[in-house]
Length: 324
Image 1 (tube, rainbow, N blue to C red):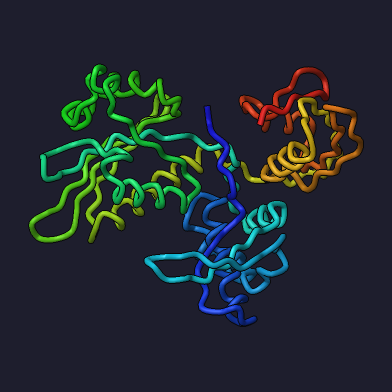
Image 2 (cartoon, rainbow, N blue to C red):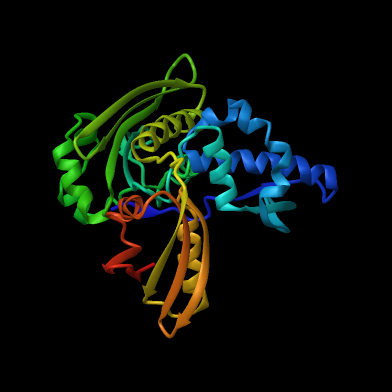
């Protein structure tokens, strides 16, 4: 039940001016951040083949634009850059780094924290600061996380700090079904007298479990370290290293198309697959569109890549339905 992560190839960052040299440096930073997100790990930042290509970041740009955003009462100039998915994937492929597809597991977070009223589970309504910190940390790696509502239904299912601290996975996994998550993360974060924070966490996905004990200077650093470790595990499970085989032209008939936005959405979704080298619209027939897919691999490889996804569903030989 993985969810599609949007804007994997887009990055926004603050810049001091619109000067050419400032933009060039910012685009390099943006490309590196996109490479981390697409691959799901920090290893890309020290790969010589990749870092050598950062100076050519502008050659991978689809588009960029400037915007003004008010932050803490002041206007901040921001640069938004969108990179070519096929080009980014090709860069990673050339460096031998696996590409993590756009469909990624959704993780429900049961995190116990200390507060004025004692231990409690983090929720979006009551704990905006730490929730934003962990969500942002996950976003750095393209890892989607959500938090429980802790409403009457959750309380009725006996979701409590004690259940999390005792590691009651059967109870928490059963309670998580209402959120349609792929896995659950349970843990505890607390301050220590000597300074800093300690974070213990367990990630459960299907029949596998991973545990971490982290000591960091503050909660932001702890959540960042945790997100990096989680993304490393999950990307290793799901990433696909683009095949070195020849490029095959596949003709796909896709129905369920309601207009130009759907055509663009289908193309963009396909282009995020590491083995896709390009997508062309051959013909539009009402709510059907015929696409030519330039795919590095065999038709069987393509079927394997699409297996289990909920966005482009095969309904016949060479015929698919777009469900967004």
